[in-house]
Length: 144
Image 1 (cartoon, rainbow, N blue to C red):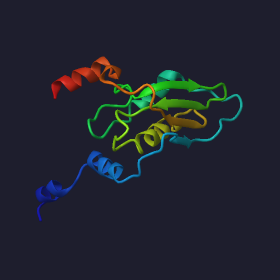
Image 2: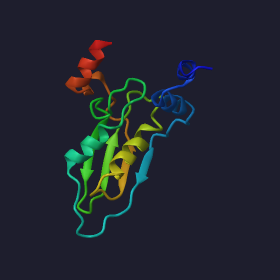
Image 3: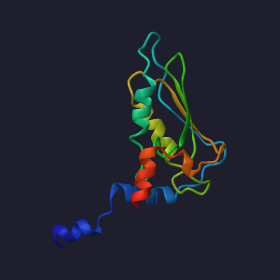
Image 4: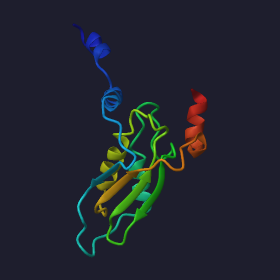
């Protein structure tokens, strides 16, 4: 088989992530992801802007818009000890990536310097709507 034929048969990482997500069990209503380790006392604590930028590296594999601009992040709490608590949602209770996006968000934030333990909680109230999209994300939807 030629290299061109090989590349036609390969799936992208985004497609692989979506396929993997579709076979994961749907998370229950109290789904939480915990990652990271406590910071030593006196450590530098990451800024909210750094956390937001880390969250922007996580994209919904179905539509390729990051979870921040999708409006999936409802709350970020940075505690005095550097631990971070995040409340997030997904676009619908039947979203096929509901089981992987919170884990990807936790991984992205936990990888930052100045972040201790990260807790991401999947919340369902208020329900996500298109009004949650950032202006940039709304423009991307208009292009489709």
